Image 1 (cartoon, rainbow, N blue to C red):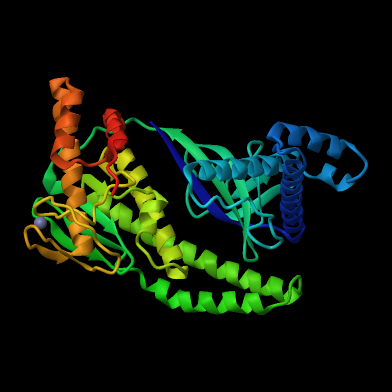
Image 2 (image 1 turned 90 degrees about the horizontal axis):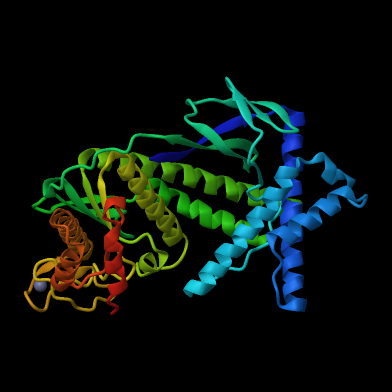
Amino acid sequence: MIVKRAFKFKLKPTELQKMGCLRFAGARRFVYNRGLDQRKKAFETTGKSQSYFDQNKELTLLKEGAEMPWLKEIHSQVLQQGLKDLDRAFQNFFRRVKKGENPGYPRFKKKGVAESFRFPQGVKTEGSKVFLPKIGWVKFRKSREIQGTIQETTVVQEGKDWFVSFSCEWEKATPKMAPLDEDRAVGIDVGLTHFATLAAKRENIHTRVENPRYLKEKLDRLRYLARQLSKKSKKSKNRLKARIKLSKLHTRIKNLRNNFVQQLSTEMIKTHDIFCIESLDISNLLKKGTRGLSRAISDAGWRSFLHCLKYKAEECGKHIVEAGKYFPSSQICSSCDSQQKMSLSDREYHCLSCGLRIGRDYNSAIVLKAVGITVLKACGAALTRGSVEAGISCLLGERGSNVTCTDKDHSHLSSIDANRRRI
Ligand SMILES: [Zn+2]
């Protein structure tokens, strides 16, 4: 299997190199914004969008012309990557439109916000120095060893500091899959009141993972800074300062959150072999209600947590079963399997069929675990019997659920997803 990982370090550029970085990031922003403007205008006049190749051709001509001599000083790949980023932004936009999600048209990049540029190649490292084409050898704070081969290098500014991030890849022997033991299984429901609610082992041991305290602490400050920014007059220096302050805090929260999810996922991988989780799909998470900042932050937290869990499980040969987008884990009774509607404000599941009273999130976690185990067992049984179809139909009869087993060895189960039952 191929392992992909990013390694990020703080750069220690000289003043001259800092100016180089700023120039590169500015040029990339210029190319991106110019391209976006062209695409917008082209669409308004002809109804067609420009392609990356058209724009890249035009960029080459622009570079050769006398109109913008400063473009010649910028590494050509950095400029191309600007257009590629734009292209990706449009592809994502069209994908969201197709899926019926909130499309979010690509926006112009602002100065001083997440300035960055990328090199697809030509970067090398030596000790704690990195060679960035046309900028030179830049020192960085090497906090750990870089593994694998560098595929792509991104230089990004956060607040006033510059960072370098290497996307690396390496080959690793595919691990042996862990045995299917329910005592090593856990169902995970993510939520707003608690970061996650777990139901572990055969006896569904109830554990809550609290939201990290930094969230609450930083949230007020975040609101305050956002308000300050909105009060500053447009294009003023103070506005730029306020924006840098705000982006610094966002970075700080992002780092804290990353630490938290990394530690939590590593801990969980050590203690369990089977993970039954909700879909990573946003529409599922949106059902968790309450808009606003805290929601947005939790949202990002859940997503990166489930993402970490997924790739770590894959590397260690553990099983991950991800419930489908429309799987109503919160509406199914964990005791008798009957299903009833639940409003967002109901914190307790009270089953009208069997009279069970249980915490809403805990109920979901148990249901997720039960369904996950059923899928994995059906999968395993079907594989040994050599009859995959039988396994699936029996499973559907049992739970009528839409659960996708994301384990590569069980990919045949994805057909279950076609039988989505909506409520
Ligand atoms: Zn019930």
